[in-house]
Length: 64
Image 1 (spheres, rainbow, N blue to C red):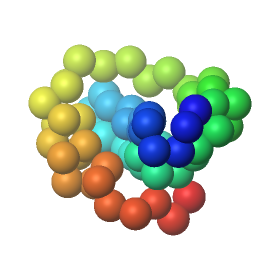
Image 2: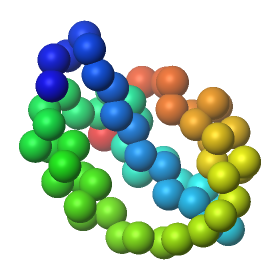
Image 3: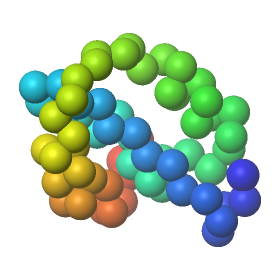
């Protein structure tokens, strides 16, 4: 992935939302794939809180 072209972040949600990694955490495709694959599936349908979490937390600098 080119550094200035694509950004990927990951939030899990069910009853609570958790930022797994922010948009600037990874720049290499393999690192993103590994992080996604290492994240356990929690399932859930509460997408509205996840979207709010993305709006408030995903656009800040990552410390990951």
